[in-house]
Amino acid sequence: MLKYTRLAVGIAGILFACSLLQAETIDTRIGKLEFTHSFADGYPTDATVKKLFNELDFQRAVQAYIWSIPLVSMAQWQYSNEHELGAKNGQIVFQESYKDKLGGLTYNATTPYVLPFIDLTEGPWVVVMPEGEVRGAAHDMWQIGIIQLTKPGKYLFVGPGQTVPKDAKAHGYMIAQSPTMNLLLGIRLMATDADARLKQLEKIAIYPYSERANPKPRGYIRPEGKPWMGAAPKGFAYFERLADIINKEPVAEHDRFFMAMLKPLGIEKGKPFDPTAEQKKILTEAALVGEAMAKANDFFNPRLEDAHYVEGSRWEFATVTPPNQRREYYDDLDGRAAWFYEAVTNDEMMHGQKTGKGQVYLASYKDKDGDWLDGGTNYKLHVPANAPAEAFWSVTAYEVSTRTLVNNKYEIADRSSRMDLTTNADGSVDVYFGPDKPTGDKAKNWIPTESDRGWFPYFRLYSPQKAFLDRSWVLPDIEKAK
Image (spheres, helix red, strand yellow):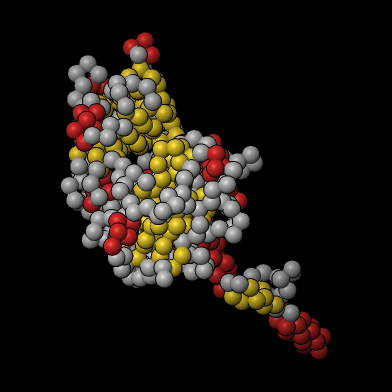
């Protein structure tokens, strides 16, 4: 009997040893993955399970970064208005000077900005648009348009889950139901005279609907040189801002999978964000990789077909995502991330390359030689004669690091056909970029840049004409100055 027992034990030992010999290790892009037998027949080891879940959380955090770019950008802008500039709910931030615009993503250097955020948590709000040349639009926190403010009168903004007051229409309110609890109004004062613009501004009234019997408009403030930043935070702070705004806003049906991805990372609606050390480490690295991917996705991405201008050109269309962010069979994840990484809001008037109306936004990140634009190098942009813009054209330089106006001591970030520029004999214009000021009359066409800082331009055409639409007029690439 003992003989047979020893034989059984011996066989079991041999079988166990064989099973160990059958363990399989697979080389992958995330390192070696170990399994008790073969990959098909065995289990992942404890160490491999830990590695896989760590990688799963990291990958999901990176994709959540790209998904949330429009939301976090808007949330940071609102946060900056409130905490850095001191704006109250519904109060307009009026940005007119160069310094006051330095925190805005790809702002126009010469346009005054009238920008109130409204929080509807406590109930509907009223916006009164005055008679005259005042226009605007409302956008939700995902930067999708809610309503155009093109008519004078009273607009009533109602939050998600809130009931429209029964007597609102009878009293002449134009009703706008917002899909998010917070929203942004972008308003343009069309008057060219500064005093006339101020009079227009003072006629805009924003207040809670509950005050309708005795309105107390929230008025406006100016930054007055206070530093502020509308670009999304870097590093771990990005996910802090995301966690905060998620708790303030409803979850759209098409975003529920992303909410599931965020839950193991400590970001869950209705709960405080208190990540573990491991979660914080993953999110910090994911923010770095996520932003790196956002840069690759944004700066001359051949995958974005709508960005194509002309064959061989270093210029591309910046506005590549539809205003509603939807394609026929999918939501435009990469297109909207590319636009909202460097810009804010989106509507039909920003797609002049397709509509022939409004504006065209051309962006470039490399020079004619294929080198990235650098603040320490001098460049020239030749704008051919008869630029096909019924209103005007302009070129504006922005910082790569923040996508805001280039911050230089001259307070010069743009040149346009509305300025007194030096014109060539054939009607063309040469615009100069770089650290060195050109000599003579060329200096009037100069946009200063600074060493060790990457930059990129937007070339805008306002009311594009046929020669642009049929490409009989083409903007050349930026060249290194000789």
